[in-house]
Image (cartoon, rainbow, N blue to C red; front, side):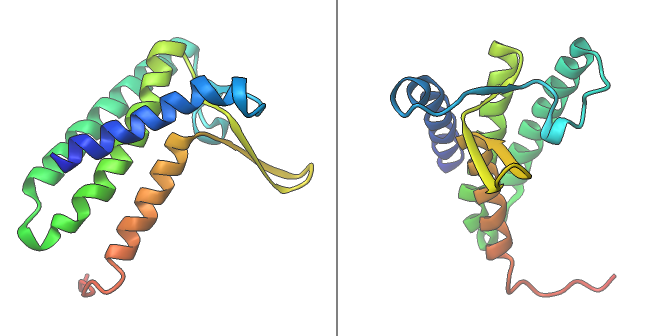
Amino acid sequence: MALTSVALLAVAVDQASKLLIPDHLYLQVAGNPLGPLGSLELLPPSWRAVFFAVVTGAFVVFVVVLVVRLGPAQRAQVRPLALLLGGVLSNGLDRLVRGQVIDCVLLRLTPGVLQIWLNLADVAIVAALAWLIWLHRGAPKVAV
C-alpha cells in the first residue's frame, strides 16, 4: 500500500507542478528529449522512445519485485523506493505523453557556468536515493 500511495503522490505532485508552475510562478519550462545530461543525443528519437520505455518498464518490475522480497527488517526501504518509483514513473509519463521530460526549475549553481534544469520528479529521485543511502549508513560491511 505504501509503495502505491507514495509513488502515485510523487507522480501527482510532479505532474501538477508542470500544469501550475508555468502559469503562476513564472518559471521557465524546458523540454529534455535527450535523457540525463543529454546522454542519448546521438540516438534517433524513435530509438530513445523505445529505450526509455524499456528502461522505465524494467525499473518498475525491479522495484516491485524488490519490495515484495524485502524482509521485515528491511521494510523501512519501502517508502524511499516508492518515492524513487514515483519520480521514474512521472518522467516516463512525460516521455510517453509529451515525447520529452518537462523540466520547470532552473538551478543556477554558478552564474553562466553551471546550471541544472530539473523537475519535481528529479527531486523525488534524488531525495529517494539520499534516503536509501541514509538508511544504509550503519549497515554492516559485506566482505568481497
